[in-house]
Length: 460
Image 1 (spheres, rainbow, N blue to C red):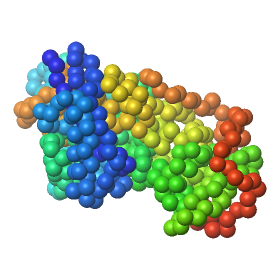
Image 2 (image 1 turned 120 degrees about the horizontal axis):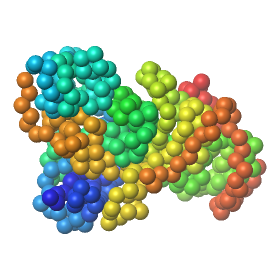
Image 3 (image 1 turned 120 degrees about the vertical axis):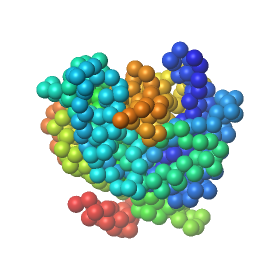
């Protein structure tokens, strides 16, 4: 049966809307719209009117392209900045040692929820089981169809305050559609980027966006941990603008064209300088390229340092076999070189899973991992079991169970698992000459050095 899925990714730097048509269990994106985020800071809605207008504009573009004006419900992402997570377990008895069905599994999930300590002002977004135990058998992957008398489930529960969820629903409603389901952003990104073998063996996925870095850890194909950091690529832009006294737009252009966090003081480019517009005037001034690269490097180093410490605090670091980076910030030149210093495991930069689309090149980008993941979630490509934001039990074999009665096209780069030091080796690749370089051996601006020292003091 043919049907359509509408997905809305409310990101910190852009709003994405995609409409997919499902035919024979295969999706095709038939509509797509994007707008710069407004009324949103670090993943948090700060202006309902501006945010709803940005969503409405992206929605109009997507509906016009898809010729799907009658679609009225959407799967919407929610940033980890809103959420709190906890683990809980639950046990149910099976009458007469009978067969385990989806009903018994659902009862176990509800028991785990009952046993948790969730504040009354919060609402559950996801209940995700990561381990089952049946009688004396531990580490049961899927108890469905098995026979036993005692079923125990261990779950990862994600919650958000009810008021925040109501504001999110209001923003979407003002844009012209209702919320069908709410999905955690890094969960959606992981669905679009992670391989099944990676999830089985243990993997951390970091979605590096404009103002946020959101981490998700999978073990045994189940989500075990998530973390939010309110730092992203826009902070690099701000750092550049402040350090060299130029506008945000000029700093963004410099970041895109020249930023390389693998700073090496011996690099041949360090004798070069750029001519940049001065803040608040029509004049221009010269800035050392080395100073810019050092500012970029320090921000990226600080970001990965915080992310690595968060993963260590999870207590799951030793069980992670791979690190996957996605999101717009992951496209930065040589960002893997920085990541390799902090993570001594194979690392890759992942684009979302390739699906048929009217705009294949535009959508096959690291920055679109979440929107692709929302489409795949709507198709049933979630974890094996879960209780979703609408209190429905989702199960891969049947997409979802409503109102249940309860009593590879990646850009892959791996480390070579050698002992990585804290110093970055000079790349052997040739460096393309920059057209707008106008001077060499320019003296460092003392204010730039002061700014670098300020960042260094924060890090060290």
